[in-house]
Image 1: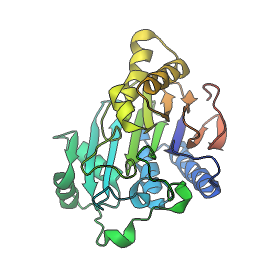
Image 2 (image 1 turned 120 degrees about the horizontal axis):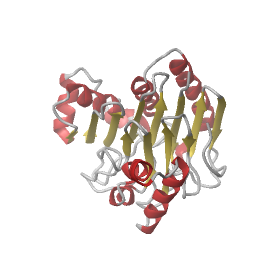
Image 3 (image 1 turned 135 degrees about the vertical axis):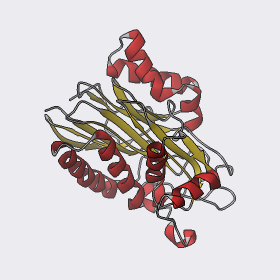
Length: 297
């Protein structure tokens, strides 16, 4: 029985910041995900649960840990995709929802659209019993543990995500973010864009994190899959090539990916990326600044 899971807490890790709390949280969470997959849970259900937990923790720039835009409003993005049938759901610039990835999952399950944005996304989520935030000012916390509190430039970023292969051979990916700090109202990054920040098909599942504009311009998540499908590239070769394209667009960041055989990669070209991985044949690993040298399973 082959299965694998990778989660990330963003490629905005900054040297000199202590991420021990995030390391502990990632270790605990990857263990929960491992139990889910070992018990036969689907990849889609597992990535949804992982990202919802990352959002709720307040330890990353997503969900509870997000910061407001220049107008003082917290606008969140998320997406989720099922590899077997390529069903996908996404929300963009959605305000005052506890779990944006849950709202994205509702869009996927509804099936009429792939993405809803802004107040329309918020109204749809509430109609489908998503949990709203009654008092945004007291709920959202730009947690000092992200390493973001002293940052003011708009290149500071963070995202959370998960990719999984389940025991039935299905792949799924999910991604969620509060976006870049000091962003303009209405700004949407790569996270909710299927093919840019999130992708899953029968070959590979990908979740990206970094400067969203560069990941959009390179269609980064789908490009990993395309290089594998049409160019016969291996998982690591495809992922590294995509990050080189991101760099050409003045972007930094990283991605996590798992393929249909259970191979895992977690490359990044930023200073660090909070991440963890596990599989049926590999014990959990949790890393922030440690370099990556290839694929493993």
